[in-house]
Image (cartoon, rainbow, N blue to C red; front, side, top):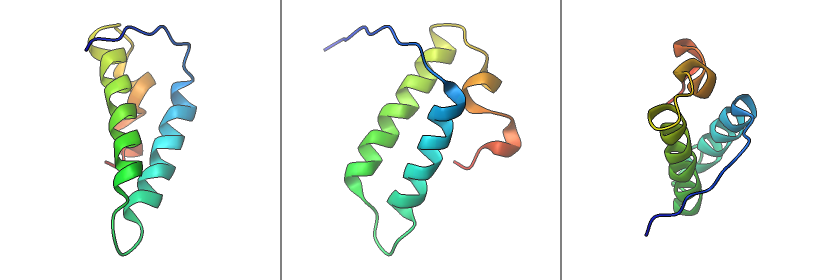
Length: 69
């Protein structure tokens, strides 16, 4: 199923939220599969922004040294 959604995103905030979810999902003794699904959704949104909508990678993902995953 293909779903098309138009969003006005704050990529800095989205990146911070993703990093916090990653810390919570993989920070304990076991992983949290529910949070992993949301992280995957954020990954897909970021990838679509760069690949299909022409948003600069640095705007979406931050500087290379900022990336944690």
